[in-house]
Image (cartoon, rainbow, N blue to C red; front, side, top):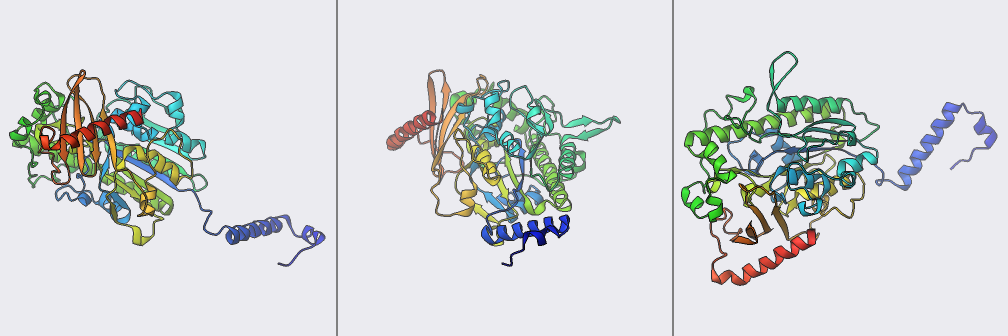
Length: 471
């Protein structure tokens, strides 16, 4: 390298000198640290409400139209065995924010709030502390106090918002569309000097509780699905309802009352499922507009998108509606991670390892280059995306401890091949055991078969040990 004397350097104009220094530093960085320094990615986390794992086209659903979700899956990674650890929105959303099981963060109902200490350790708070511009749009769902001051941009909604919103001119506008516009405005206000993280929490496709119409979709989607007939689920017949535990057959349970309202006749079933599908298609259209805005704003090459639901949803299986119970329809959810930086030969993969809602926070932090707090109990999913030889979880705990009599409490363990569950009634419980590998619809309860007593005892111990581990 040629050396320049000090007096010669001083003769150079200041602007040229600064340019020379910057160029020299860039060369040093390129030569010494090539490939190790790159811009921190933007992150968008999208959460739907009550969308089950098979309610999108790329998961094999032949009726629903979700072209933008399907495109993200084909260009990213889809997790075919993604689950929530608590199938109720308040607990699940708290688990997503904190990366913790409900027993650890303590949110089991709709009024308990995350402590200030817990809020400080959520992924949005840690990202903001480390220089990210953060935003939240949509249904918050954790307690009654909105954490507006914890975000740079807050468009959160408390409780269960109405789908039909009245604008300043007195016109009815659908909530999903309003949220979509808020997302676009957030992106437009971002710049390339500061990374951003936007958390979008849709109400769709959750039913509008208290409204006889239940699934209130955007009128622009009225004609969609009109000319099709959605087949009834395999387990929709009364014989499967009659095989449930006696406490689940009680007509006063929330799951059974909502089944009567939504699925008890062929006409109700068609109207409900098509309304549910229209709400999901509405979200899909918003996803398409968000991706378009990222493109025209110049963010598309450095923005990771993570898509998930807060829990699953019964569509009449076993004569049930809602979620809450640890059956597959209730706990299994879609999960797609789109990372534009992935090599083309790694895109479009389907990963079958168990992924959980508690994995979202540590995964987001890893993408941002931030160490996850030791209290986070989830795992970094990007490890699965980059390596095939990594040791991964073989089981997980499911818990629903909301103290509300019409919805029985439950605990369960799910492995890749088995599920053990127990419904809690005071100090007693009713048990079930299923071999998921050959009985994916959970129709053959093996808990009372003496041949499986040893297996049952093993899962009893495993469930107790997992509870002890994650308290």
